[in-house]
Image (cartoon, rainbow, N blue to C red; front, top):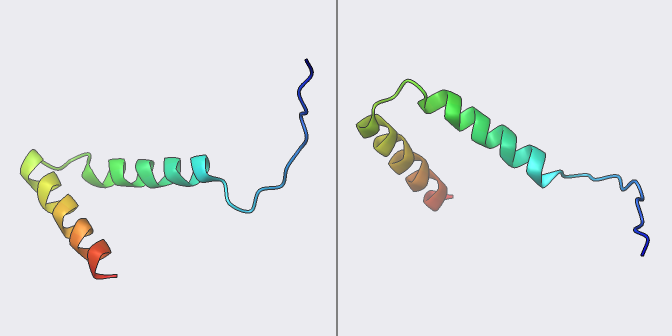
Length: 51
């Protein structure tokens, strides 16, 4: 059984995008305490719900 290895031009690379988001968040919270991280996530969550 052969597989097709066609090059597909992607306009949006989900894995790359989410990896960038994860890395950004990781850098932002790397020096925070547990309580600060909870507040950070709470604030981000409220911002997303407001949109």
